[in-house]
Length: 108
Image 1 (cartoon, helix red, strand yellow):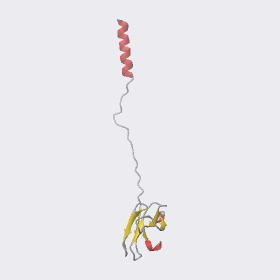
Image 2 (tube, rainbow, N blue to C red):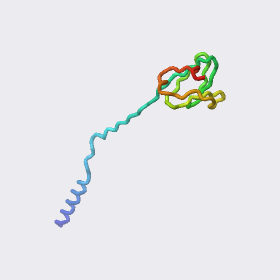
Image 3 (cartoon, helix red, strand yellow):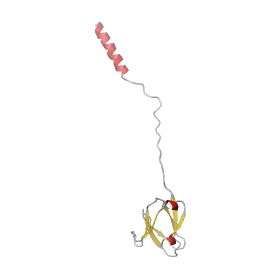
Image 4 (cartoon, rainbow, N blue to C red):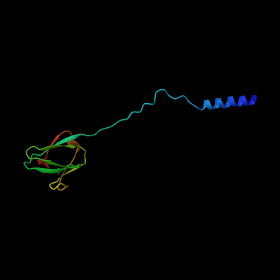
């Protein structure tokens, strides 16, 4: 009987020793979200209505100052799109265009 009490006591101590105390404050997890969404303004100064494909979709620019904001991703190509799909290559986006106004007449 005495050995049964000792065995039970040892088993209880071993069972309780296997548990650890939980931290009161959870570990801090930091998430960094980087947004790299610089834009440039593309202005139609040609005097004609122009449709362009910006790499993400087709935009129609009215004559005499029609403009659009284009995401500045260097290497992206911009085309004319008179029928709604890519046609004539205009220019490739460079990092120097970011945050600036680009005139369409320079490339047409």
